[in-house]
Amino acid sequence: MNHEIGDPAVHVTVEEVRNAFRRIGAKQGDVVMFHGSLSSMGTVDGGPTTIFNGVLAATEPHGTVVMPSLWYDGSEERRDPSKFDVNTSPAYVGAMAEGMRLDPRSVRSNHWTHAVAAIGERAAELCADHGKFGPRPSPWSDTAFAHGSPWQKLIKWNALYCFIGVTMRVCTIKHCIEGMIVEHILDQLPQGKRLEYRNLLPHDCLGNSKAWPFFDGERLQCILMDEGLFLTTKLGSATLGGIRTRPLVTRALEIIEADMASWLSAEFLAWRQKCLEA
Image (cartoon, rainbow, N blue to C red; front, side, top):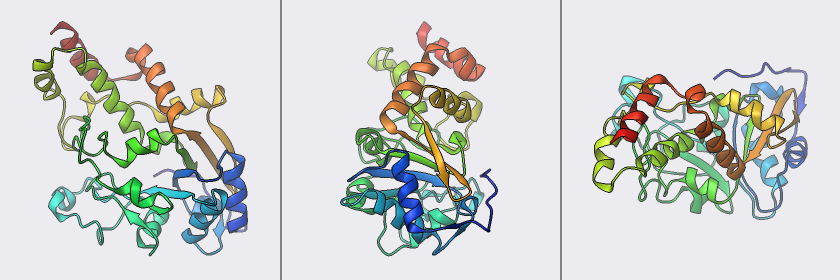
């Protein structure tokens, strides 16, 4: 994960975390999801727990702080979903994600590739029943970003989606958007043909990724910043950015689906054309 280089001389406290998140729109009772680099902020007094407590302070009472808690890292030894243990399998996406997994207050969703972990009022509700209904296409499995996943709940609840010292290049919820793009195309097909054409796209993380509608998150971030939807401030020596999930998803779909040729791969566009001709 590429991230900003922090200044160790800068110290970050719970109060500074609280104030920074409030500057980008965190409010009472919010659900706040973030990606981030601990070192990008400088020296965080108290480590990851300080960040979690600062977000909870920014959203008190009844707030919730959330992080991705991904175990699958592309390695051979983690390609078997049965090896994932929601209680013991480590998160590979940085010190803060692993810090949240280990926090005794946290709850973790049970998905081998795209689990989340959360602390606070709605943590258990968010993490329950990951992918048990409403499958949505994705290369990792059609349960990872399902309509019954924490990722969809973050959209439904219009959570504040944030980035500390990193950009939207690591925006995991964009895979929900990619799945929606596929869904919108499949929905135009007769019911009896949808599974056939879904099967022409990669079904797992070992498939041909060029055929999937991955898009440039940093390019999208620039547009959202220009539109005033993506706000930024400083947290220690890091840039803290944030956007609400509903406008993020709505505008991403509008922008990408209006100009697929400039956003998506030739392989995906060829699959789409087959669907249009079906």
